[in-house]
Length: 116
Image (cartoon, rainbow, N blue to C red):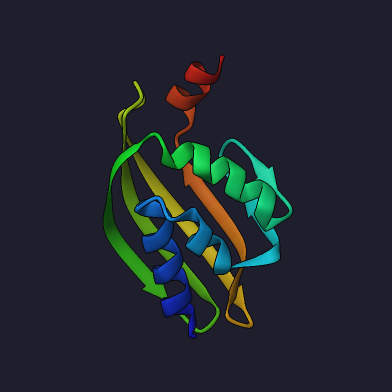
């Protein structure tokens, strides 16, 4: 699978709540750095993604960019939390048909308030 297929399939899976399928597209040693958390393996990341996904009402993909080994998605997360809609940029690096790294960027101000 090329980068576009891997990232698109991953994104489509987690956004409909199929985190098991989403996990299949992640390298075991995934390097995730986000606005709130960092993870150094896919299994720990999937736990957090599962919890976040339960807050989602809808995802609206705005733009996507793909190259040989990298991709970027810009989307709005419409959440059921007081944070409301969260504009999100996600940057991916792929290796051997798996997502090797994710950089997730969003304004975490409202979510941090919810976390206490």
